[in-house]
Length: 157
Ligand SMILES: [Zn+2]
Image (cartoon, rainbow, N blue to C red):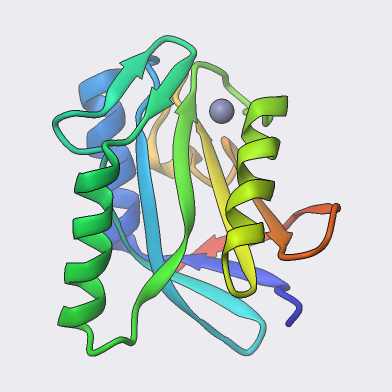
């Protein structure tokens, strides 16, 4: 499978915005749930990190119990239509760049997945929802491949 494009739902955007309003440039994030159709990943629902997540200026870790529960519930509520597609987190940057740690962790998750993992990084510095397309990067890694692909993305109309 080759992913060519990513589409984020308005509901996903709302979660990004409200998390950035709460945490500012302190990192926050969560998991991305969606489906793949016509070489496009549709990101429909996203979680935050849960109340036991770790938020620091340059570090974020979601609460694994919380996000696993979120994945199970959203998958069940959608009759399996929505699946885990990846992770998102913020950076205290205007134009975010993945750290080496980000890429290593993306690679590791993709290796344990069936096909790929998506990583969305949002620059939280001066963030506004209208700036999402300019202040984010969407990176895909496929299972069994070393290369990372920065892919074009858009918001559902
Ligand atoms: Zn990062």
